[in-house]
Image 1 (cartoon, one colour):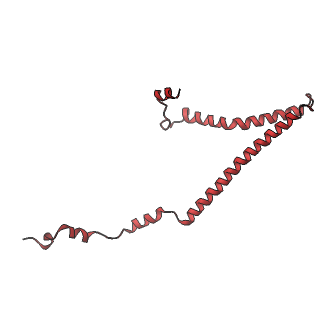
Image 2: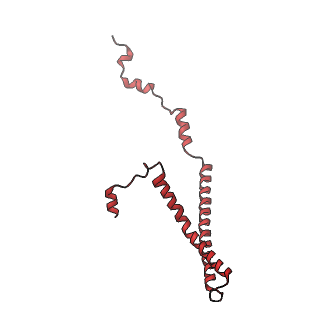
Image 3: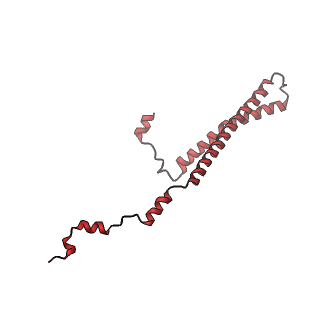
Length: 140
């Protein structure tokens, strides 16, 4: 003879034993994944300030380069009036030339050193594997 629990279908027990609401831990994790409105505003303000700062640095660097080039132009345009024995004029002209040259070459030198360091010396070569022979042939 079967008991009453054995006679009823299993779906009744499944519905009666399940919990209809989410646990407190799940509710807390859902809320903590979303940043607060204050944090969103701060993040956007920091982005705008950083953008303006980087843009200002770029503009100032270009203006200083233009200023150096203008100064070099002024020293070369005065060459007709300057005497070749005037040491001060020659030093000024050479200094302006070297300033422009350094401003043009230093960023490329830093980039080259970084590439050599990462490509040849660094221990993370797994991140930058050597190209295959077919890739080298395709490029050349």
